[in-house]
Image (cartoon, rainbow, N blue to C red; front, side, top):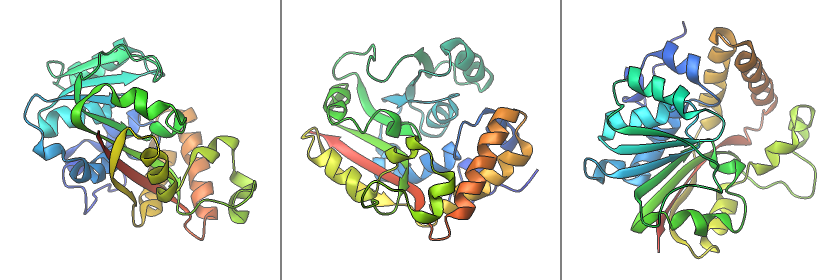
Length: 254
């Protein structure tokens, strides 16, 4: 097993690498969440504050939020059944603080003002580019509550209708949801739903993405997930200009 210790992620370093690899669904979720946490102010939330983890996948981030910040987490995902996540949450010892829910992002079964914060790691790009989405979602926040997301991104928006030249052999139509920090800042600002407090690029995010993908390509017990990781390795190795990476966006409900 490769060493996955990360100098900027001391909390993530305490989690079992095999558990993370067996349950991952993309870029390292805990590294991304640990980068988001200070901008979102997770440490300032009181114990027991309610947080929606939207698009939580196999609930790795939900377990992290409960363990590290003593939060009550609603772990919502469309692709992973709630019973599946419930077993993983129980084994992680946080069943008293994490509630798994099977839900689609446009049909969330929660009332207005339910949550103190909303988190989404490597998921928001699939539904949040809709101009009408953010105002609907932020109604679930208490007044002044924050939403924070981390999404795969391009450092700069491509001009025209063609992807960056070096990425063309590996480009898929779904990658057009990878937008720049500037695009996300404008998108959220003009929604009128939040005051944007951060919309920034992760320095060397491509390096973390590649490092994690290389490990998952070799170590994942799922051939399907290993294949996706190999695809990511090829994409990132072709990206010699390092246009790919991650953006974090944080907004406060107005």
